[in-house]
Image (tube, rainbow, N blue to C red):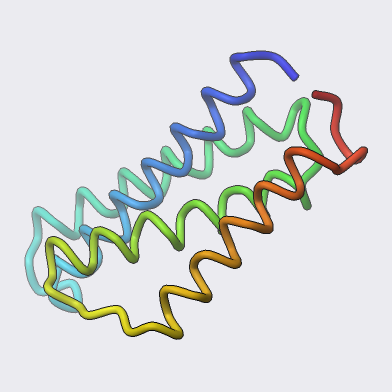
Length: 112
């Protein structure tokens, strides 16, 4: 897998997390600047994901995208929006990270 593929996927995840944070800040699309930023971030996220999909299977890319995205947005929610994570939520997030690690270390679905 080329470094460009990984960079595109990680940038896609970052844009999706930024878009989701802006979605929260848009207050149900009532604030125009966060709403516009959200649209740009989501558009860029899907474009970058499509770049990653040139070399990466969609199921693997989406598993990494969703897993890392959920963890990142949960941390941002806790820090920026003061949303609390209880023990079961933290356990679930740890299991998600574990799943991504298993895919990376043991899956033969993509070339390493």
